[in-house]
Image (cartoon, rainbow, N blue to C red; front, side):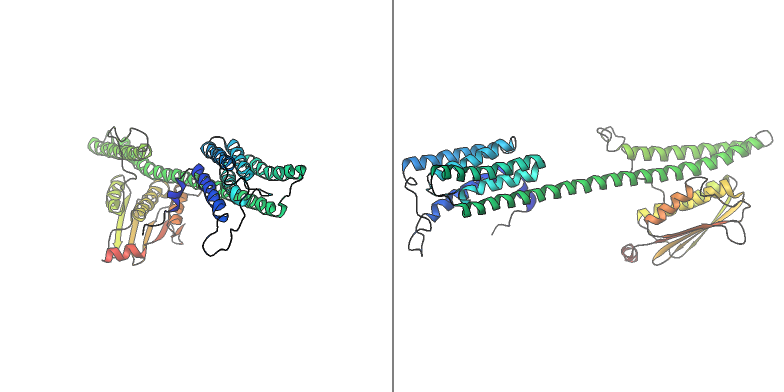
Length: 408
């Protein structure tokens, strides 16, 4: 047995095909109820005088042609298509010898009304509903003026199905608009989050390097006449820090442009994100020590690979904290502690400097750290301990799944 088509595959069928299916289903039902089916003593509905005559069959053929024209024009001109389908329902009823437009003849109109209400503006949908109800009222009015019998009760049921089709289509229209609104809001939120992530990366990358460059340049300026070799080494460190910063900026800008048409084709694609992690802490410590602020790194626990977001955030927290020591603490050393726990990663950066640490109004460093930790559902504290100096502590939870994979 073949599987039932999924909803996305059904959406690929044009609305006109559904209206056509509704029309021919109504025609089939019209003929079936006028035949004596197995188990019946007589047909459910007595055929009209014209039903099996050539003129009756001709009217059915004309009605089918009108319905087909409505199916073809439904997507381009919905109101014209609705008029054609309603005209087909009226013409098809002429040879049936009934006092109202039966539901079988109006089934295609209900389907068309649903699609118009689901895909078009509320004004167009309301106009289509009024056309459908006006056709029903007009058919009954003509018969009343001619002195013929009318099936008012049955026509009320047909009118009710039209209203229901319009309401269901309107509900689908509102649901689609709501989904589009949510998608647009999610896209906007993703853009804002990406901008904040890029801002954090730029700040952390540039602030640390500029701090190191400033220290090295100042040291070189002080000893350029008395110790030219030391000055040369300091300027070499400035060059190295500048090149590393430029390389990081190129990677970041390359990631921003990688979606630009033809960018990757030109062979200039870049990684999606900087590749720093806790493995680069020792390099960070050496560069900062060479700049004049000694950094002691202490590791505890079993060092193991971490998820990329945690690994990068941990490095950025340490980098920004060390940068704050260089810029604000007036200290000649600091201590970095990294503890690998079974369910979390603990980071602590302390100094014994005379400065009080960066104020929240001084920049975006501590704000960026706090945002990183919050995004990872961790804990963050930055304050001056009673013994002086400044301390930054952060605890980042490590997902259990990641821990289990590492253990395996």
